[in-house]
Image (cartoon, helix red, strand yellow):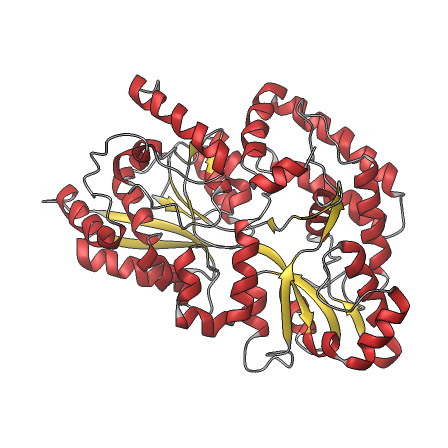
Length: 491
């Protein structure tokens, strides 16, 4: 459907601003606003409720939400308020974490669906969009979103595809570091480390420093290990992604040629594999929950993870509770300046099905659910998946009790500065090849250079299969949304 001329002009101006600040900025910020909900965010929730009641006057309405297993505690309290106040009935369908994107995709093949709203993993949005499974929400954003609604959202890169808006991020899954505070502060260890390496023992700024600390603390004969970094085949590529970016490169150049097999990529992989020797014994096989359980025993120097990691480590049965320091993922020196590249590698988005019979009401529910007040209620649930993603969440006492103030301080900084995942069509294909070859190298079956050359060749084939021009359009849009400081440091 062709856009009205006024809408196209508005988006053109909106995207010019987005490109300069990397944020979610609605067209209403640039034009006279006729928003029926107004622009007062403090009164937004009630105005959404009132407007939905007007839209549903005289008829029964039900919306159905497809949600990842384990997130109902985050979602249902908000939906209950919405349902009670508007009369709209809300029903739920549950899908496993690994299958929810597949389930959304499968239903799109039949041009019908039994849900109105879905919460897919953010990295899978491009494929769902290209398949026609979820709809662009630009028309509703321009009609309803208050001027500064997204101002306090800390990560919005994954909400867009080819400069169109598809759904609000509702989970702050930035990657950051966890350190054993007692080991960092031990005076004997500090003296030994400085003698050996020539600089003070503290939270590392670079991957080189972290790798040295991991080696220093690795003492398996004493049941002490350098770290719990993931070497599971499914997760190992995440760490390489950060290490590679921290050396000053984008994964593609401006013509969509892969750069992952350049000298920096090979060096990043060589360093990752060298460090594998100094991790705890089950690093290659343990998944998320096994990793958390192992690290909570307190006999490892460091780990890498998300808000969910901290919620587990901060529980009353964790031996390492109150014995943690936090920091961004380490970086590297590029042109003489420290470059740190925190990474947003999961997250869930509120999206609306292309086949929903109630798309407007469904969008208004997502706006309601991501408002400052309602999203805070959602993130307060201690056993769910939704980690802080709005500025308001970090000041809430219940959220502080769940995560700790010290963790939230580090998390907020990482959220503001996160690089994105590879939000291209076929993301899973690119990623499957990358993690397969990295795993082969980590098992000593291939050299880093040969593995990354093979990965780059496969990526070229994926580019051609989906169409260079189509992939390049999104790559240019995605590249423009990297945090300003990081984008200017990468080539």
